[in-house]
Image 1 (tube, rainbow, N blue to C red):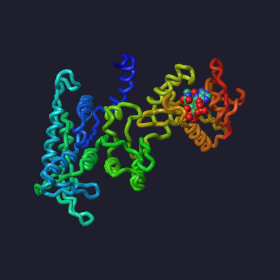
Image 2: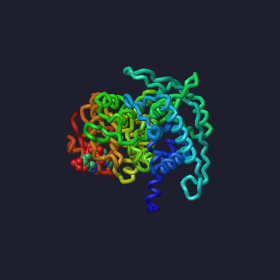
Image 3: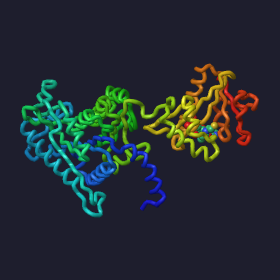
Image 4: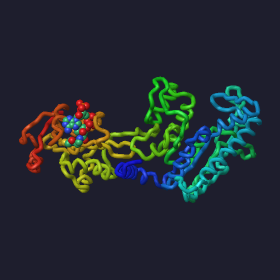
Amino acid sequence: MTEPDTFVRWFRASSPYIHAHRGKTFVVFFGGEALLDERFTGLIHDLALLHGLGIRLVLVHGIRPQIERRLETLGISSRYHRNLRITDPRALECVKEAAGQVRVEIEARLSMGIADSPMAGLRLKVVSGNFVTARPLGVIDGIDFEHTGEVRRVDRENIQALLAGENLVLVSPLGYSPSGETFNLGAERVAMAIAGAIGADKLLLLMEHDCIDARIRSPIRQMTTAEARDLLNWEAFTPEVAQHVEAAVEAVEHGVTRAHLLDRHVDGALLLELFSRDGIGTLIAAEPFETLRGARIEDIGGILELIEPLEREGILVKRSRERIEMEIGDYWVIERDGLIIGCAALHAFPEAGMGELACLALHPEYRGEDRGKRLLEAIEEKARSLGLRRLFVLTTRTTHWFLERGFRLVDFNELPVERKSCYNYKRNSKILLKCL
Ligand SMILES: CC(C)(COP(=O)(O)OP(=O)(O)OC[C@H]1O[C@@H](n2cnc3c(N)ncnc32)[C@H](O)[C@@H]1OP(=O)(O)O)[C@@H](O)C(=O)NCCC(=O)NCCS
């Protein structure tokens, strides 16, 4: 049982994510393997919870093991080329059966509402349909893929209308052609195409493995699309992981804000990824996950949240929202996954050829990893570009940090005249100076 204060702290810590995700559209993919696992009920509960928190959900399921089982029963062996099934007419029958069975199974699970379960009293509306138009993949390397197809078009309007009506959209990896044929599609390709077509905020791919660089067996926590493409070219992933990375990259290139690769064997993987600061999976985005950049007006809330505890402790001088707003052009921030985790400001005294480094702060969870140093370097570079030759800082508790980075203690008289007049004698801060 969780201690009440742990629970309260945990719940409060997840509230920024609850607010951030409400009204957003997520496409979630999971393979047919997930259904064969006893943890599947947990996944269904988590999906129902996401829906309950106001997230619009499209679920795309795979059916690979279910097809294989049927083919085996009939004594037919599976044929693959480039990790894609070759679907002959007999295999297509198995594909249709498997898709139907899996879809019905998921719908049944999502319809549960028994007492004493996380879904008690819930009435989820689940809709499946002909959302995907497909065409044959054709002949590749001389091999005819027959009824294996690729996505040609997604019925974006219909999916969006259903989501707006608070329906949960469930999609099987099948596509239909205008001539009435059925095609077997790669489920992660379907998820990618739908996410791109409806402009989803996130594509979440639940995989059978963690996303690791197989060459060095090292997990990857985040990648830009460019980095992911490089790793794909260097064949850093196993074929299964590569397939998912490719789908994630393409989704982001088609406008999905973020793609997440998750190991579905982690209990509550979706919740951990979506409601905790660092998540557990691999994030793929067009821009780096963490950036150091000039601050903008919309960062003020984040800056205040970061510095208020330090102001209360007397480590930083109190700054009002209005003051930060006026001086926002002086600030630099480190943004990590939408949250401000570091900041610093440079106030220029051009007549004295000096700059003041102020308001340097890092979120406690992100200290000791050179971010302070990087903020200092950014401020120094900015000061140099403004033609300032000396940088000073006033501090009560962080003297040694600055001494170790090239500052030296100086006398009050070294301060620019305008700064002297507002020196707070009560704080009795130490003054440190560095020549640039
Ligand atoms: C000072 C601060 C910005 C450093 O950020 P950071 O990202 O942890 O810095 P770095 O990773 O570049 O440096 C870490 C080193 O600084 C040391 N350090 C951290 N705070 C320190 C302090 N107050 N005095 C002396 N050294 C300190 C750490 O022990 C670590 O050294 P070590 O690895 O040898 O143990 C951060 O600790 C912070 O936000 N502190 C509270 C706010 C503050 O004091 N701001 C300065 C006001 S003028």
